[in-house]
Length: 326
Image (cartoon, rainbow, N blue to C red; front, side):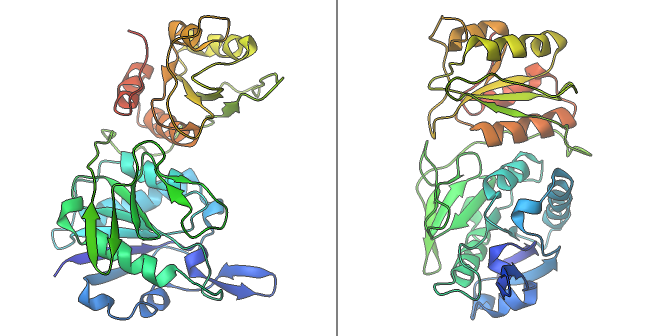
């Protein structure tokens, strides 16, 4: 039988109703006890990392959890791992761990959209499905997977699309990797992923995200950022002022990533007016491919933290259909 390390970090799945609303309450043993028959799925080794709302997580904490995962997955008796957390930033944390060099054993991230005090609490079923997926050897080499509402999503594409719906998670570019139900995993496709050569000691910050909105002027703080992500309109278009703001950073060797504010698709050269996508390409910006602004920021912060130069980062973005001009 597979042996799965389950790291409990908090989130809605671990909350109960308090006087002012849902608050962290349930430790690992409490959550495991809510899933009868889990011992028939796999041997579970619980690790209580903390009870932290996902919206409070920091890069340092995410990297700390990543090191916990790496240590557990390096043990020969461990066949896979599950991280239990809140869903607020799960698309960012899952992608951060996806970038870390942790080998090919399955890693599944899971949460819940309802607390243990609410009707239709989805925590137990989601946790059972996550352990089922982590114990399936067919997920080896597929990187970090998010298991929610019976679906399996690759960390590079998964998005939270609704504030409260059970089936809030989607993969808008390529669709889910598969599904899990009644103890069975069904895979629809496989994926490739970018992996850093080392786990950074710390993320490089700040990496601000500037979104294009109607009739806006972009601004940055006085401190030179470690990187910049621009969420452009449409296929990669911005007002000219955005590119003029970015040019000194590009000249200094700061990685500037152009992505789109659209929920799917990728920026592409093709518009030659000032601030158009082609002018960003010619200026040396890295195009994000199908990574959105949130995930692009994660890749820049961890990549620069790991010592990568802009060309190295561009190669990693190439995994997702992006890159920069030669």
